[in-house]
Image 1 (cartoon, helix red, strand yellow):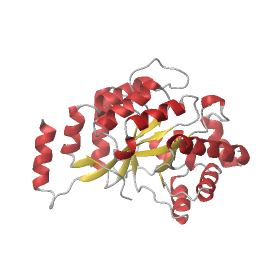
Image 2 (cartoon, one colour; image 1 turned 90 degrees about the vertical axis):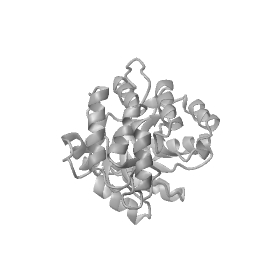
Image 3 (tube, helix red, strand yellow; image 1 turned 180 degrees about the vertical axis):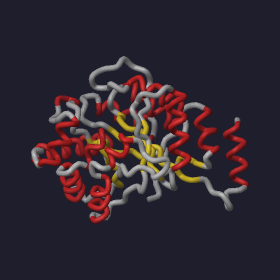
Image 4 (tube, rainbow, N blue to C red; image 1 turned 120 degrees about the vertical axis):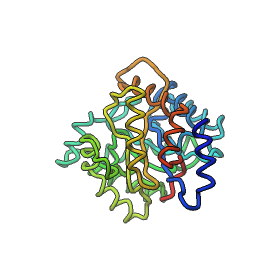
Length: 284
């Protein structure tokens, strides 16, 4: 294939022009069988650096068993905790995202409820997998909000855990779309500063934000822009999954299938090669 030839050629030139490492992270493992299957297909084909887990749904423990069956622990792929406070998975406490954001900034979020929810999600992860997560982030990026980030960092200190923390600071060029800019300005730099003061590692740059409104070709175009602008060790977020009927729990199901279709394709390998990039473990 074009990608194989390109990689062989780059190996010859690797001393002078090494490949840039890209950290490709999938969100939402545990949400549904369709999402889990899409993520694990990418893992099997070497197309992910890691994936984050939603642990609140009743199906979480069954989903976690598939990771043992696939020997994820020996695959080199990282497994993170994808903290949720904005959707009521498993009947859990939550607030719709707009109310969560506004409540965070006017001091109306119930700190005890948030602390309890994060602790439950953490313990469900460790109970199912027998270890702490490699990294922590948030469903709809809630982990960076005021109050939420404090509760999360308190939990990590209590557990004496040192996962890396995903920061939403967008790559500098091309200029981030308004959605990416807004997400970052809801707490990215403060989250970074607080995490680093606690001795936790963070990523320097972030990409993957869009409106979940692209065809496979449109998503490929966006990925090309992100890869072209991404510095070493940029975290790129993705949301792959096999097609399933759209539900209130997963309104972006059609977009998941478009993402998976591209990420599993030879064309993605060619695109990585064209931009001198490789999918790799984080090296923050």
